[in-house]
Length: 419
Ligand SMILES: Cc1ncc(COP(=O)(O)O)c(C=O)c1O
Image (cartoon, rainbow, N blue to C red; front, side):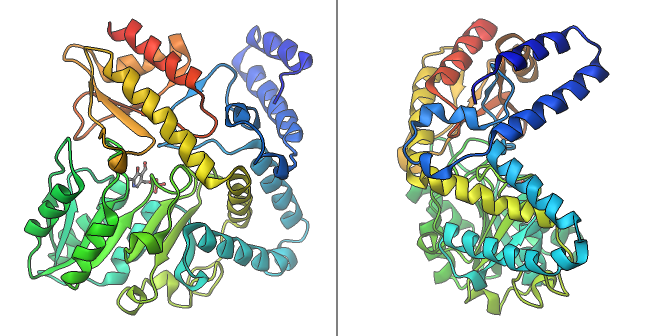
């Protein structure tokens, strides 16, 4: 979106005013930006990916490299979502339990096509955590059952099993993911850690720590051969990477649409294969997978419609083009980070295990949170501070609105801050 002369003047003015006035002013700017966001989607497929940034409300001069935490919603998507919301409020019952139910179902069908599964296998949720909780609850594990997982799981994919361990006597076994890794080596570790009582393997598609893309098709074969369920936490997958769940072969797949699918915050998906539905029966899906049933209750209707608009946006650009762009920025990022001597790149180099997330471990004596704060305040670059298995780490993630310049800015900033 081109910065109008009027906006610049207003921004300059706001910079000189107090914070309260500035917030009100920014809301005004937001409305203008949203109004400018009306977009003919058919042009997106032809536009250069280096020009995508204009479709987002990101602060001017901000290199946002933390899509892995939350993705920005395109202004076009936000505008359509708000329009729907206004329409809903004109007559909540007639609209909300009338035409909007049908519209939500259309979004569900679109989401099923997006992940490559049947609409009867796809539920819309509010996030990955909720989806994972639903799967775990629906598995009805018993005392003495085992769940096999990894040491790189996010709380959103791990708490559901910890609940079972605390309240139901379920035993959690853990594979420590090696770095660097090879696909077969990873599968071998899982195979060795399985017990006759392992009822589920629960693993990320892409780890939030190092961006390692796990060999899900191989893990699916392993799970099937042992008669256990493969539960995948796909929070860091669809949208940045092309994901077709039937090709992965897993039993369930959970994701957050507010990350890589660039949908409004509070939207997620859950796939449970037809076969797995026989043994996974979440309470909320007791009356079917539709967006509104007696078992799931009233939904956040506007954001669900927003999810549909976000998928239209991504589909119009082209999912393969987006993945290629993200992985090409990752290659640039990986190479440039490796040249900075004092830091260690902890993400996999092998393309088959790689994703648009790249993490580094900083040297002792340099605090990751301080570096991240300085990157933002002095260089206008946003990255994620990592805690957990990556020691003193930072994570960088790139999406369709990022460019090679953003990556260069990050690397220049890191050199300045770390040396
Ligand atoms: C791998 C993984 N799983 C689950 C989550 C939780 O996502 P949400 O808060 O959208 O449920 C995240 C968030 O970063 C994640 O990276």
